[in-house]
Length: 152
View (tube, rainbow, N blue to C red):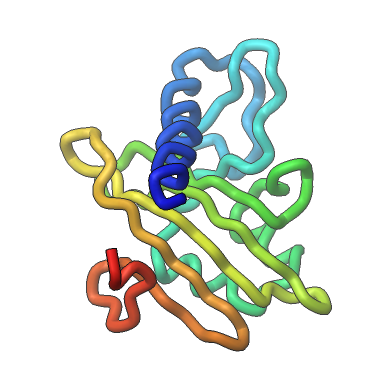
């Protein structure tokens, strides 16, 4: 299962990072710095130029759908604020994806998988970030005291 997650993240990010040079469609506001659609394709509504840093991910905790959409500056996959991808080619940028669950109009669960874009153009180690309104937070980001993947 872990291997599949790595392949899925690599495939999603690979497609997102390769496609900009094939572009011509008008990007959404949150995409103008990092993403354009393939020729003849509408902009993917889940792609955002927002880095998925731990500080940013914590801003999603308890957020409303409108607040989430404003933070990402894109509507989310299928026009719903539940799945987003952060895409960037600047060293230190956290690429990856985040899935959100809402209860009574507020985020109650954040699940993200990220890699840090390195100076050599490669992705760093995969890191998970999870937050649950009942269970709390775990993070594989440097400096975290409660790791998500401590057993790996």
